Structures are given as C-alpha cells and as structure tokens.
Length: 543
Ligand code: G1P
Ligand code: ZN
Image 1 (cartoon, rainbow, N blue to C red):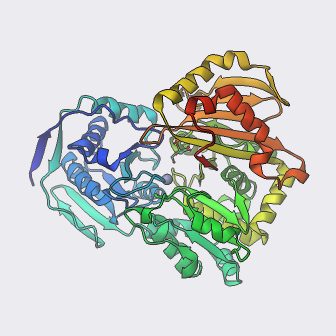
Image 2: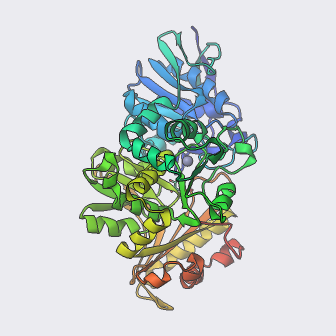
C-alpha cells in the first residue's frame, strides 16, 4: 500500500461554526477543500495511531464521496480501525454512541444537520472526541489555524471500500468494519426505556405518527418504532433517506415538517406526532392539535424523568443553552438540583455531562438529550415522551397543561431573519452593543430592563471562557429578549431573536403565542431596529 502526498493550497474560510464546518456542497467540491480540512484535523490531533475512528453521515449528496476520501486519509494517518456505517449512514447520536461503546479515539460525522441537501445544498463535517461529543472550541480553532497554512495532505492509494454490505476489510495496518448503523443504538434505547410499556400503549390503540423527512432517522424509526414498538408502517412517513431529502428542508418544525403538522392539527389527528432532522439529533413533539415547544419539552421530560427506567433515581442536574426558555430552571428549582446556562451549541454540555453535573440538557432549537450519549438525540426524545405518556396515561396536551399549572408557563418564540446582508447584521449587533449601557432600568410599556449585557460563559469544569455568545435583555418580571447571529448558516447572516415571557395566569395558557408576546416583539424591534437594519418587515421563520 502506497501513501501519496499531494501538494495543496490553503483556504481561508475553514473556521468551524456552532456545529462543525458547514458550507455549500459547491464549496466542498473545490479542489483539495475537504482534504485540507481533514488533514488539518489529523495534524492537530495527537495519539490516534492504531486507535479507532467512527465514520458516517446523514446520507446527503456528497456523503459517500467524502467518506471514501476520509477513509483513504485515515488509513494513511495510521488509524488502527475505522468503523463505518452501512451505506455510509450514521445518525449523529448513533455515531456518538459508537464512539463511546468502541472506546474510539473519536469520530467524523458528515452532515449539515437541518440544512437542505443535494448538489445545490449544504454539507458539513464535524469531529467528535473520545467522550462522543463535539470537539471543543480550542480544538476547532486549532484546526482552523492549521488550515490557514496547510501545504499538503496524505492519502493511502487503496481501492474504494464497498460500503453497501456489512463486511470487514483490511489495508496495511488498518481494519475497516462496515457496520449496521442501527443495531447498537437500538440496543441502547432498549436499555434506557420501558419498551414493553410503550408497546402496550401502542397495542392498545395509541396512534403515533413519525416523520423522518427523508433523512437519517428513517432506518432507525423503522427498526425501533416500527419493528420493536409496533407502530404501523403507514404512520412512519418519509423513512427512505434521500441524497436531497426529497427536495425538502429536513428541519423538524411546523414550517418544514408540514406533512406531519397538517396531520397532527387535523380533526382526525393521531394521538402523538414527532419528526427528526437531517442527521437525527433534533426532534419536534406534537400531540393531537398540540405543539410542544422544545423548551417546554425539556422541562416536561425533566419533571417526569423518574418515570423512565434510565432516570428512575433522579437527575444530577440539568442544563440549557442561554436562549432556551427558563422553563427548565423552574423545574430544577422545585427538584432542588442545579441548572446550568451554557452558550448555544451542544459542545458546551460535554464537560458538564462528563463530570456528572447534569443528566439532561437541551436547546430551544429542537434539541434534547441526556448523559446516554454526548449529542442531542431525536429518537431518544420521542421515546422519552412515549414512555412518559405510557406511564401517566394522559394525552400530550393534558401533560403539558398539568405542567404549566404546576410550574407556570414560559411563553416563547424565536424569530429568524434569514439571508440578511452580513454588514447590516453586523451593524445591528454593533448598534445594540453600543447601546447596552443606556438600557439598564429603562422602561418599555410594562416591562423594565433589569440587565442588558453580552453573554459570556466560563466553563465550570475546565475554566475556558467563551465570549460574545449573544445579547441579553433581561426584564424585571422574568421576560427576556435575546439577539444572536447564527453560526451554522452558509450564506449571508441569520439574525435570531428569542422572545420569552413568564405567565402564571392559567386563563391565558391557551392564548396564541405571537399575540401574547406582541408587546415584547415590539420592544425588540424598537431597541434593535430590526426592520431598519434588515430591511425585512416580518421574520423569515417563526418557531
Ligand atoms: C443552531 C441552533 C443551535 C444548535 C445548532 C446545531 O445554531 O440555534 O441551538 O446547537 O444549530 O444544531 P445557530 O445557527 O443558531 O448558530
Ligand atoms: Zn441536526
């Protein structure tokens, strides 16, 4: 086996964002682009020779091409074993589990999560470390710095590895195992949840509908929800992974999972609906004519966690990303456990999970997870809800209402302004930052600002500091408005505005969220000049 060294030229745009390096497919197709990033990764890592690498992706366009490139480079780098998903498929949480189970050095996951796929869509590459979680900022920054000066990369001159059958191959000192992407993960789910309680719920006529959005969770849903739990095939929608996600946008929210949303909001809706995203780490939970806000979903799971076998002894603590609503904080307070507030992005939960400071964590962006892996996990969240419903024998809306009656309701929305011109977005942020000092104690309608600041996080485990993590307007009555720019977009800028108010008047629990939050939505525009800076009258997406 020959190792070939190729002279390359560096690119200047390979800084990973909120979740790995995410770019258009066209960007990745540039000469040496993928190879440079992978070689930069291998060059800054240390101690992987002879160790195991987990490799797979969400099946989008370019997934298989990229996997073959990475196999050739990982063989050249001297990995001892490469575990690849059959057909190059692995959901993000399943990859995290395989890293942990195989005590691997780490894993490479190819995905642009919920971004569209296909030749005109996006691709991404993430590296996860030995704990199964996304690489921390210090590592991603080192990769980026290296990528700026990389001059060559190495690959092993080996034939394409057939990924369409489960088999073992060997090249030089490297063994390549092509594995079933679902089996180990399905086994883990069986260990965590009461499958027989969920199965009897379904056998007794509880109707569940799941939408895989033509993305990675299709095979997982067929096996776990279909074969093992007995959900009808016709209620498992879009379960064939497609390279372009069937032309859709694999983001589980009411806008993009519209087929499911229409079903669940109709008069003949099933009892329970759920969807997952491109790489299987996000989830949306719906009841009959009932949408569960992701921040509420996290709080409900935490409040009822002891009903689930894996968490029957209680939670060590919980965490949420800063823009996620404070619903979980109220639950934590009642449970007498710590609640941590981290910057946006799953990588910030890793240290807290590893140190057993927290058991559950989540983000408003349809991400929920626990210490079972080091990624958020869509199918896991669905099973949490089904397990809770099976034990409580209540509908989703009854569970939600009872939760609000006990803890109060955090009325919550996120407004996204996509495709904003980068300079305009930067101007908006700069203008806001310059004004923060003048905002304390200012009153707007019935809301008075308590604190106006830029969020900065000091990791309680390793002391690392992450600055510039979003602008917070915290009001005296508990309401919040948060502004931040997305770190996952691939063109222009996306402004995210998170708006939240705390309500304890049960007569208002059924009020429309946008109307309830109208005064705060106005205040957000008044303070930040959203319309003026973006030139947009309304948000592109509201969740
Ligand atoms: C978005 C979400 C964030 C999530 C990330 C990866 O990042 O807001 O919560 O962790 O996708 O799924 P953003 O585009 O806001 O930087
Ligand atoms: Zn995702």
